[in-house]
Structures are given as structure tokens and as C-alpha cells.
Image (cartoon, rainbow, N blue to C red; front, side, top):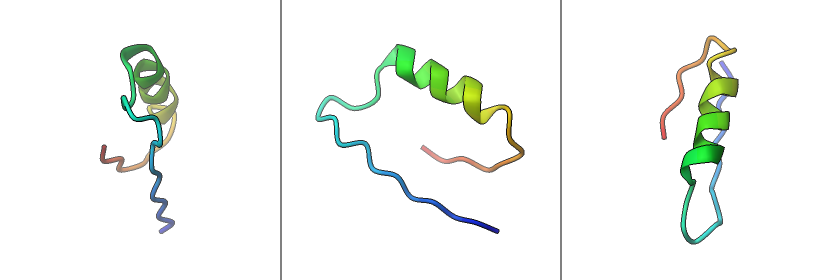
Length: 35
């Protein structure tokens, strides 16, 4: 199993539209993703 930790460096965090793109992309994989 591969593991990746990612830090979002934007001080205001992950906004709605980019978060939606992230979720749409993540759904293509059989992965366990925690935010």
C-alpha cells in the first residue's frame, strides 16, 4: 500500500471549487482518502 501526505500551503485552505475538483478526481480511484 502506498501512502502520501500532502500539505496545502494556502493560508485560507482548500476552497469549494478546488475541493470539488479534488473529490471528482479522487472518486476515480479505489482509495481511502482522509482530509
